[in-house]
Length: 276
Ligand code: MG
Image 1: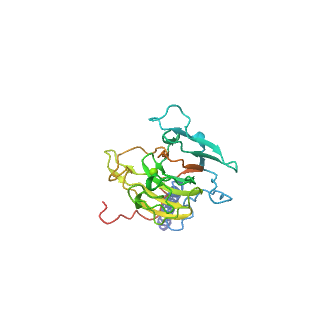
Image 2: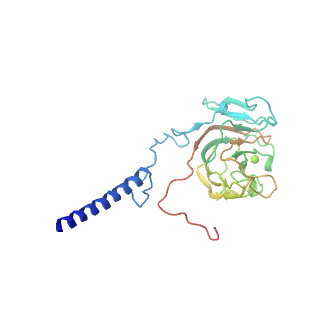
Image 3: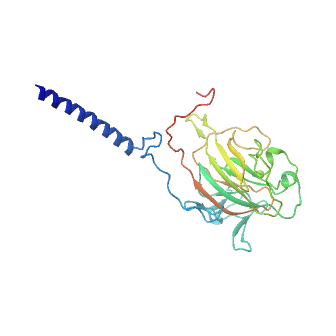
């Protein structure tokens, strides 16, 4: 009788142990073990760093002139009508040719990291919004402004590095006319419910010439001129558009990386006050 009881206990212990091992293995296999310092938590992909800041990393998509198409509304054909040439160092650049229309990437993107270098004309002919105006439209809709804002009095939410019509940059770090400048942007796409409601607004973190100008700013909607921003539902991806505002702004060294939607966390999402 005693032997039977002992055997029964051993069987129960073995069953519990097997159940525990199975659960752990299941969690590891499904990457669900997100507890603090978990050894099975998925590790970031290793990637060699570029030799020089601004150089494209290994997984970047290079957006040279062949990766852009003209705005279908204004020009026909699949080659851009902007000037494409090489500078004194052999680096390709694209330059706006007035009235040839905007250009957009042939590929579409949602969450992304974008590096782009731009230069406004060395000779200053105009003022305000007519001085070196262009812009980068994420998903074809949300404008990150380009302007010669070097000693150029203009409304704050329309100067270089503003989210046009919504928010100025944290600081004005615009270089003088005719000098190359850089933007580095992390963009998080908006998410809409099936009935078109905004579940999550778009967000942007951006550096102008290496300086933070937007720190996780929540974009309020598309960026029309002199209108209140609002969202119109759209898909998960859209093209990057560059604006033809009539000024010969040049672009070079453009690259983009697609970013994942979310990195799994061991902590639950913290809702904002009033958020359901
Ligand atoms: Mg613009």
